[in-house]
Length: 64
Image 1 (tube, rainbow, N blue to C red):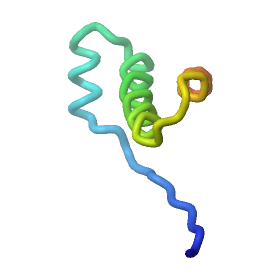
Image 2 (spheres, rainbow, N blue to C red; image 1 turned 180 degrees about the vertical axis):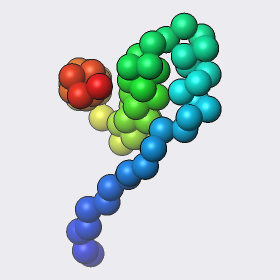
Image 3 (tube, one colour; image 1 turned 180 degrees about the horizontal axis):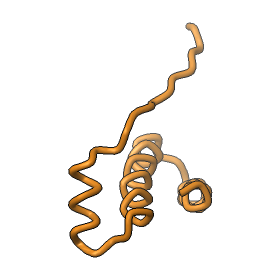
Image 4 (spheres, rainbow, N blue to C red; image 1 turned 60 degrees about the vertical axis):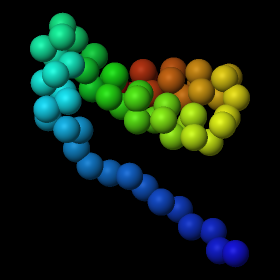
């Protein structure tokens, strides 16, 4: 067995940002929503505890 680290990089989809903004979110709110959805999808798939997920949400909000 070998350990490796991976990373996901890229731009947010401009169409998704446009859609969120056209529904009333400001640009920062639209970015935060898309990033949180991505990160929480990863956490949910890892089946981590609710406390860890909430900590991840709080950290993400500080970054955005």
